[in-house]
Length: 108
Image 1 (cartoon, rainbow, N blue to C red):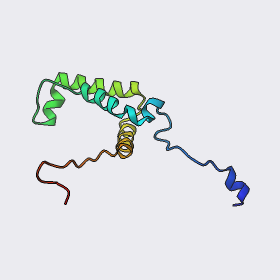
Image 2: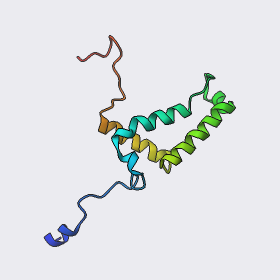
Image 3: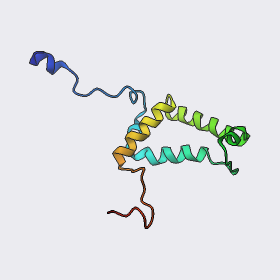
């Protein structure tokens, strides 16, 4: 490859998973708002000890459908795209999955 050909190559190629996302989802500042909206759609006054019970509950089923519709309105094309977006945002914001437990996981 010559220097001229190398200069013609794009400097940055966006990840195809994130290519169709709206600008608001590309902003790390909107992460908490989006997460809060999605979590609030799953809120249900009933409790279930088994996922099979949750599937039979009409309120929970309606909430899951509402969550999928909200994800689509926000601009996510699939659950996979949402999960990848979430991983990237958590990495950018420095959010750790492993939270210290009081008195146990203190910095060694």
